[in-house]
Length: 104
Image 1 (cartoon, rainbow, N blue to C red):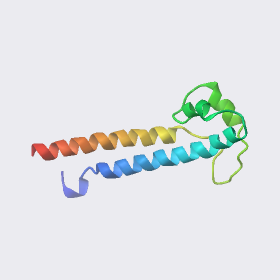
Image 2 (tube, rainbow, N blue to C red):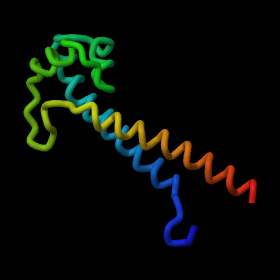
Image 3 (cartoon, rainbow, N blue to C red):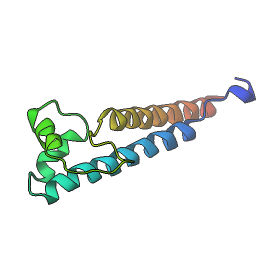
């Protein structure tokens, strides 16, 4: 590969980690508020982080009373999923690049 078109697994890892941290913070703000109001527990809200399709997540989200203009009220698990995919891709690419470096 030419120098301008190198695969940089470190950047992919950082992007994935950033998305996961952002998703965790968003989930905690939304579901932490719901748990604080007494409408459920973190154990019940846990599967909502990665997108459980159960009715519990929708019910808990409907009970959210959070009203910040910067934080969307409806948590989207796709952010966490995208971050997890980027983390896995970064790890695999790092292993591939490291493996290529050893074989050359």
